[in-house]
Image (cartoon, rainbow, N blue to C red):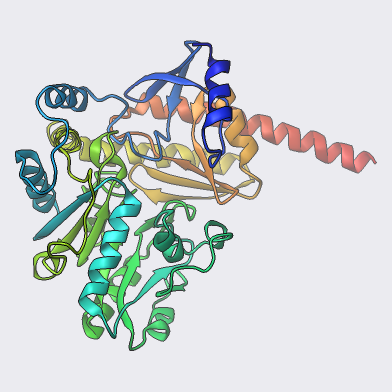
Length: 406
């Protein structure tokens, strides 16, 4: 099909709730994708980190192929082997607990909300979240998200959420009241601009939750599955949550979400209290197990550390060359570059050079290459970024000269 017809079909029949880039992708492998015209792109933001071990990883593809011939779907009223095995694998890498499976990060977060409210009701049902956080697009997760732009037009918001400044323990102490039941946070705020939680803040929040008998929830939808060099980001902090939510790269590209809760609280969600039709299906579990296998057997956590160090070194070299780069921050293979100028043009120019990145918060470039990325691919991406920055610098100089001449 002609790529223009594909775009037209979207225009005619698909709800327009996404900012679309006029790029029709047909296939992918590892860090690369190819469009309908056969052009190759270096993908340093693969599906908002969904393809965390690379596009069409062989282990994941083969696991799905094998499973699709055996059993595609089974009701959660019955058992199937892979869901139990996957739950055990997640718990083995995390903390003693139990897992609820769903299809997305928003659903995983909704499950966490329901669990802590079930534990606290009727008198305690308020959850504290952070400014600039992002927890999903459902009505409850939008209310929990600390960014008004995602909430506008959907009022009245679901009650029971209080938002405080990130990395501010004094604000948390002031916000907690008799109705508070939990604190929820991302350890690295992705949509918020790749803002990293301060280790002292995280430790203080854990102690405070212990003292006040609050549940601590870590949203690891974007940071989980090796993104920061550890299987889950909280392991970099030495602080264990009571609940954790996962999705995105958990399935290696296949949709799956999960909520993990400590054993002593997980059973509060008994039969009939929560459910999802497709959660933890055989195909999704096969894909997720293959993802864990790839990370373990191919030593992708180590690669995230080594390649991540190289990525930050190269990005900071670029930072030193251009005055409009304010800061480079992040962890592992999750990097943000804050600019003093708008980032949209930079994103578009990178696209023209066939480098796929992301821009969030208007001026923060995001780089989240898959865990299989090699140093030479990082070098290539940074070379292209440097070329774009040089062009932007020249344009600014010309524009400034024209203004002074007037």
